[in-house]
Image 1 (cartoon, one colour):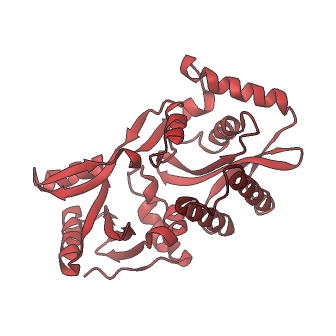
Image 2 (image 1 turned 90 degrees about the vertical axis):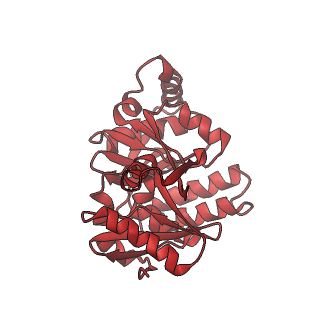
Image 3 (image 1 turned 120 degrees about the horizontal axis):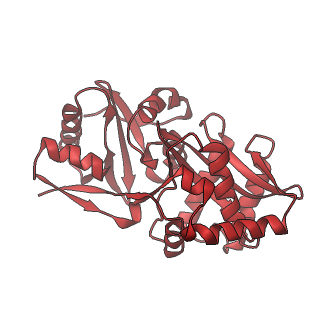
Length: 296
């Protein structure tokens, strides 16, 4: 069996190079995401024969992510198949469409790819989120212009240790605005994620930005490089009472952090209609399809 072991913060030096040098744009391949969601997915890792293997649990079912490395990818995939057989438990292979195409090339017509729309990731060009040009994005420009009229003395700040307490205060206010973050399992998990991310912000290699008005943080965003051409935005928060707050942090963070990347990955909508509408309203360049593999 593959010798999987729990992931610790100190494992970043081993794991991060595999993630950063891969050509995949998936937000799943962010060390910050992997580490900060351990409480929900219990992700473990192994490095074997030049490949990184990741195994996690979703709804009590084991899942394997696509192996990352520079060696024989077919042998790495077969290593996963053998591990599934040896463990004798229900498992699934979780991957994107481009990963399935690689699998299908090795084993033509032996597997089906079952997509899950709730898992699709929203990929935008950085240029579109920075400039917001065109008629389709006129409403976003209007929101930003109204924000600037209402708060002409606003500041954009990089997230540093000094302003993290203000970001956490904003998150707690956001929780109250949404009825509390202890009422729903997903919100409880997100609260843990947020606290862990800010606690270990520097060690995780995260980059963030925030909007401050009258000495108070009213919006923030943070993320991490996913590949040579893609930056992943992992979190974004603002208060609904701050009209244009989400629009201004989205645009400013893209401008200050993502200008040197071709794409920005703003992750999934988790099946939430309001989040899906919000992400679609920015007109993504494409959706990164994800799902799981089943044997025909």
